[in-house]
Picture 1: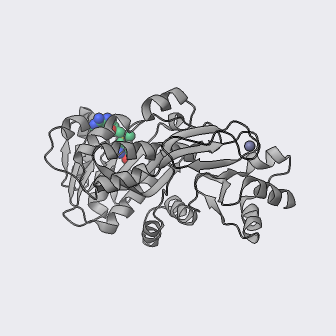
Picture 2: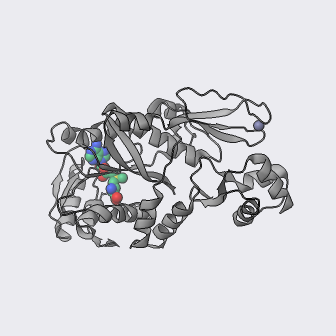
Picture 3: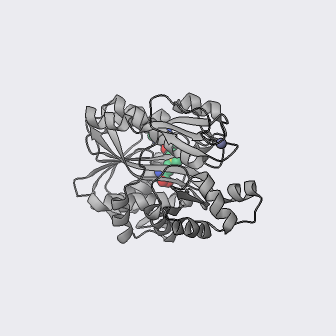
Length: 357
Ligand SMILES: C[S@@+](CC[C@H](N)C(=O)[O-])C[C@H]1O[C@@H](n2cnc3c(N)ncnc32)[C@H](O)[C@@H]1O
Ligand SMILES: [Zn+2]
């Protein structure tokens, strides 16, 4: 039996269950707990063992839980687990596509957790939302988003990925940009709450806002990331088309990635608020502390990459952060990578500080 939160998953045979995704489930439950009422409706459209639906039912006030599972034998597994956990949910052995095209209802929370990309399901999921719906989305096609499969990223997300040390952040921003571009087709804007890159997956928590203004505000957050492979310069541009082509430091042709979301990706107030009452495990608390403290500026700096280029011994991220803070720059750790930092200092300043450490 697998136990997580208040869920007891007795039946797993043939159904997918990844204990590594606990952090994603813990944070999802913590977020829903914050606002859920008895009448809050939740859709777990990729149920597998049913663990997410079960946890929402047992750990939050929400009692209107619908679960979908396309695979018949897996749906049976979910049904057994619902019964075993005394959860009165509405479980359907239906695909998202079938359900979305006949459903009369919309949901307050939808937690889409498919195998691989969200792309084949997102359009149908958007038929099940209303103003204020919280969308929680998992992507495990990180090789595509992180640029190991550039052609697939262009095809699926209509975005050019970056295949270097920044790929976790550019990948997450490409994913968020794609969600925003899909949402606006339905006249919704997106408000990111939490955006994570963790282990082999990416996870977005966002709220939808109806209307042309909200949609337009989301479109304004789209743009491009630039990177100079020669001197390490990086920046973003919020624009329909990128204008920057050459590095302002060394005139090298920039590696440009996008379209992607270049705006803010975390809602600090919500993160601090759920961190205060968080009941998940240590990895989740640590993640909330790191993203809560992470400086909200796009694109981090990887220390091993910087020190290797300078030909100097390894430097700890905290030493560089302290060095930059002494010079009145903002600098913090980042959840994207434990050996990287975020700062408003430019590459030349960072290099100068590194050499003097
Ligand atoms: C990654 S697993 C879900 C894991 C689960 N949410 C958890 O936290 O353990 C994805 C599940 O979605 C189901 N699935 C895939 N495509 C689907 C679709 N179009 N509609 C409904 N279910 C689908 C698969 O059969 C599989 O059981
Ligand atoms: Zn350069």
